[in-house]
Image 1: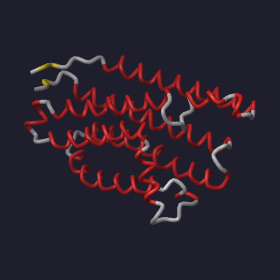
Image 2: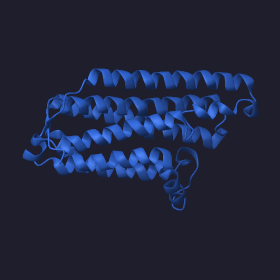
Image 3: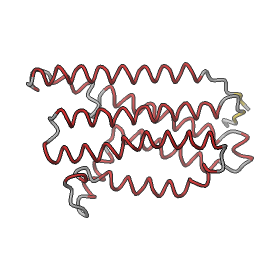
Length: 226
């Protein structure tokens, strides 16, 4: 058995400041990008663009999702979890967030979107149809897990709900808005840039808040890591 002692305040503060710095750099670079108006002269904008793949913000987002997956896994190993028969629920969430971490860089959602286009009119708010497929998955997951979370102390329950709301409002809500703007006017507009900046910011801080909750639950827990 291992007792986990974690300074969750320092960890969450570091992650929050890191996310803020990435967002500020992104905004500054975008402002310069639109001022210059010539992509060929400023192509390194992609390194810090929150809407691009395989860059610094993508690595950060993937790491915090992987951190959440690890925290869920550790919760499945606590004596309390085994006593209350919660292990499978925490392991399930660990798997979901591990997949999301991998998807952040592997673009699995885009491949799913390409498949979904065969069944929907991929225009307007459904211009990025992968959101529809993932939205259905979220509803199924919520139906399966609601009772599990509802049994928790209400403060913890509402904390999880707030984290989910912040993340999903970005990943789904602002993704719909961005899709509509992209469908109508393309991606090289100020409006689209504002929408996806808000979207990605909400996603990052939704996950960081989740990490805070999970670290709080892990505080002083005895964990069997065998």
